[in-house]
Image (cartoon, rainbow, N blue to C red):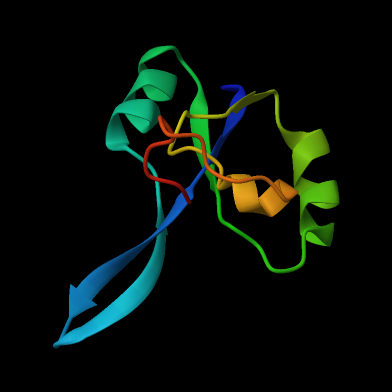
Length: 88
């Protein structure tokens, strides 16, 4: 059996029928890399209630945490640095 490797997703939007729709997604290169290494990629959506993760995480053999945009410093009561890029 191939090892189950969780991959965290990121939030975005997609235009469909003239409306912006929220989506959770992952770069396909991460999915292919896990497959090429012999693993089974499992996409982990952004959840409102994280209690479901307590059930999922123990079943995984590994976890891929892709890089992304900067974390908004206001989330921890700080002002953005002049070099802070796009945040999410």
